[in-house]
Image (cartoon, rainbow, N blue to C red):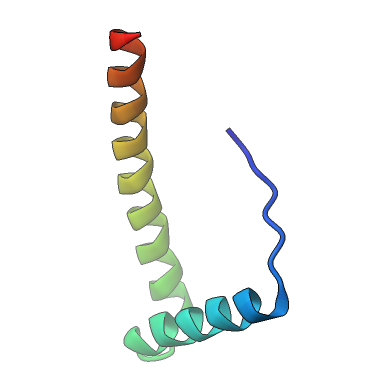
Length: 59
C-alpha cells in the first residue's frame, strides 16, 4: 500500500539530520548508502509481508 506523507518543518529537519548521519556513516559515499538503504527496505518489506500474511491467515 502506498501512502503520501506530509512532514512539517520540524519533522523535515529531523529526517534531514538522520539522513546526514546515515550518509556520514558511509563516509559520504551516497551510492553505498543508497544500496544499503535498498537492502534494509527489502528486509523490512519481507517482515511486513510475513506479518500481513499471518494476520490474513487468522482472520
